[in-house]
Image (cartoon, rainbow, N blue to C red; front, side):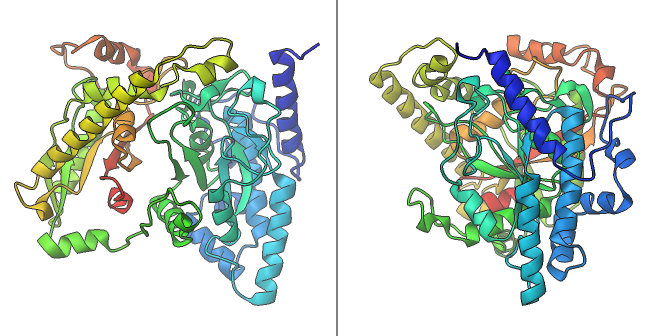
Length: 488
């Protein structure tokens, strides 16, 4: 008799517990009474050195590792221990890798002792990885119970690059079933919650990575945006980090390896450190378009406040010019995106959860033509910001990343503020700017919802006090192949 999904999930979760039990010294028990915001709990359970290590910036860690100030083993064990605590607090990992990680750390320590130099630019740095990204000999199940025993036969190319640069993989993180959800939950691993408020979602589909990094069980991780099965919207991988320098370091390492030589579908564009300086030399100022709303769902007042705070700061910078950006038919973009996410009618996913549907090839071709026309129209709108001068176009768009802070579990529905850039194939960098404050972040009494989605977003953040202290984030968006500009 085949195992039930509950039996399979129980076996997978027991394996996860076993991976944590291999960490020595043993992980201390959590306090009996936990606050909703658990970000400070690790400080109660780790040693002073472990706290110093796990709260250091990526740059500081790499400097200390390259000189031997901290050994790779010491740093790896500190992050393993903090990652285990994070798992116990918010359920964010699919497994820890103590045996593999500490063996790798020992090799790197020996290399540094013998050669008096680091093995590569990421020497000894622990990096976490979303489970969906294949790691040879380990599961690659996308959180489907049906795929619980599916294993990767080789490392993903991006992992090979990071490994050659000297990193250590210490944790694998949770994702939602299908890799196509705004929250991170599955029958296989359970629900991942937000470390700033465990009543709320950690987001998705890389919610495990986000939660682990939020608790500093990792300083640098690898996630993804969408699954590509049956989709005509390009998915991509990308870094998550506790600081901006970590993002840039990973991007530099990956592109310096020239991955396009191995994968001919990749575009040969290096990381351009001086791209923003070149813009300034041509016209002296970086031009940033400010998009306050996508005209489909109005951002919560907390997000608007965060955006206006950032705009005020930018206006005080002589090297920056800000202009308003009017979104071009984001409602249509949402409709196109929703149609193209599952051009097979969700058949591949449906087969896995016992239902399926099909779409004709003609339907798909028509949708792709609509997508390409929309992308051209959007590009033309961007070009028009230069008033006939290509060098005077906006460099990036500053806008909300979501229409509000993290929501209650099983309530997230709208992701048009990020799927927009999936459709256009534009890079974006998300960053925190402030925190929710129910005393001042209130809807104007005169505000009338634009549509049902907008009304849902208004109702979603009630009672407002439940969201106090939650991070509010924005994003910088660049044009295709201008990833560096999104990190200015």
